[in-house]
Length: 131
Image 1 (spheres, rainbow, N blue to C red):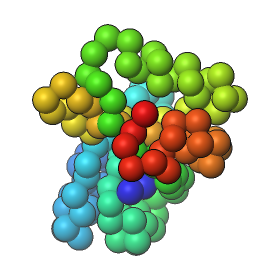
Image 2: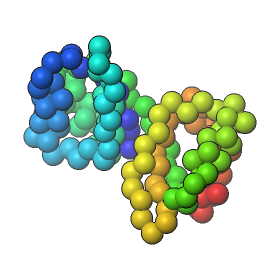
Image 3: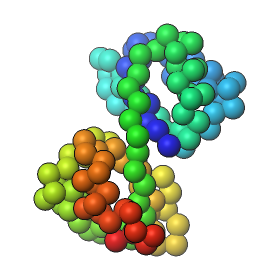
Image 4: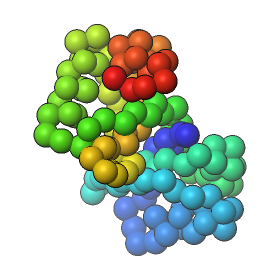
């Protein structure tokens, strides 16, 4: 799973152009966000990494690809605060974060960080059961 972050021109149809091209390549977008008014920044997450790279390259879109970590936590007040505090106390910077799903009291997150190994160790992601 990978995050693809890009700046798109601030004009009608730019997001449609990207998502239509990904759709034609049968690439499922797991989550997406767009922020900004001057130079809109779009970030999307897919599991089809080589195919997504190929589509964006063909469109001539510059992007940054970042690997993502995944974690399930309780869907309750304070869970995200505890999660982000653990990483902060370990000196790990969270670059991006997405809630992929919520189900039966749990929330599935994917996130990128500046130090993947330290984040894995801090959050015990090498274990079969999340902390």
